[in-house]
Image (cartoon, rainbow, N blue to C red; front, side):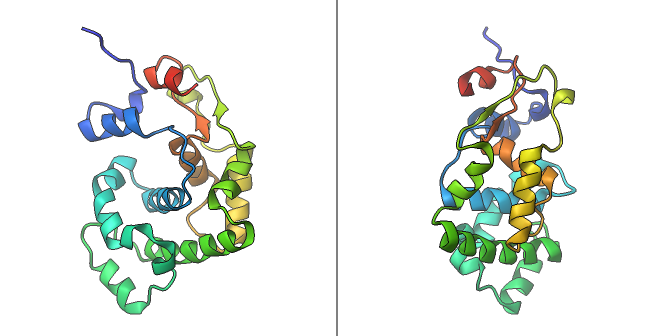
Amino acid sequence: MNVKTRCPWCGTDPLYVKYHDEEWGLPVYDDQKLFAKLILDGAQAGLSWITILRKRDNYYRAFDNFDPEKIARYDAVKLAALMGDAGIVRNRLKIEAAVKNARGYLNIMEETGSFSGFLWDFVDGRPIQNSWQTLTDLPAKTPQSEAMSKALKKRGFNFVGPTICYAFMQAVGMVNDHIIDCFRYHELS
């Protein structure tokens, strides 16, 4: 029997293992998918990622499939409905941040034409290949995530601190932070 070695953070929960094996660290270049992931990573602040992962489908439903044009126009009635939606994390600041971030996204699209290009510029357009031995080797933030955070905040984004930005960069493949013994490390190198 061939047992795959994985990053230990995903444990044995089937949903978490599937996320690790099929998504985490895989480079994403689609503007709207990057926007959605950034909102979800902001929603995760102070919580475990598995909490958000279990609610991810609810987030897509509640936030109009993360359509930035729609989210940017959310009004008090929609915000109240989101606050009453048990399928998502009902944190007013995080919900309001999604609206601010949608407006920031639209400004970046107008300014640069590509949210993906804007974000991937922080890693010179290609994934950084790290070679961590253990989870304790992984940093919580990097100069690139600090620069990304600063640039996003300058454009009105919230819940995009350097630690959130680094978790986002890991998830969307801007950095390969699978530990070197993990089967995904080699697949993504």
